[in-house]
Image (cartoon, rainbow, N blue to C red):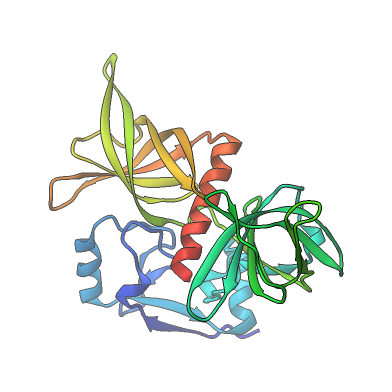
Length: 303
């Protein structure tokens, strides 16, 4: 099998400061500059590199997929596959439970409406039953034949499928019957995916024999770590800190307290200290909350 590769220029929009690189990055002589996963911490670093010219390698067809698998790149990003994290499944293959939350999006011309409902049950090939949406404690009745996009989260996967309202009823309680999907589209949320945020946090760090508290700001966030900005230096590389912050998921506030280690430390032009931190020993409920939060932010960005 002949492996055909070529190099294409990288644009500024393809590289985000504070977010892991999706590809190996090369110079104009096709020499490796930065490995995939490297995080540029400052805009000035990116500006200097772009002036020299940055390139990424493309590998054609199946050869690219084979190389990605051989190199351990399960997402296939090095081969240029944008959809490698997506798959289609049957609804009954997903481990769903009665009461799981679904988000429904109305497909209307003049406005975009989203509501949260709960799963009542489903019968393969027949229908999916969900509760009627509510706003401020008041029911929102949906007309029959209304087109919807249904989204939900299970494990580390986000799912979506199109549906129509077959029937809405208030007997024996308000509910809707939706068309059963032929397939459900799933998206894997990778641990390295970072989303831009501005979340105030409280930080505790050990200094000699005492604990020091400080305020900070999370400027990006992933399931595995974050970028933490603070007016003072919170420690050195390898030091352990504790970070407390609130996440808002589906209008529900989740208070998290996470232990983390400082993996990088820089200072920006305003004098703020930027700490690249890696989370350690996440409890299952916190990991699930973080994954859900990151997915919803990614979904909002893509829309």
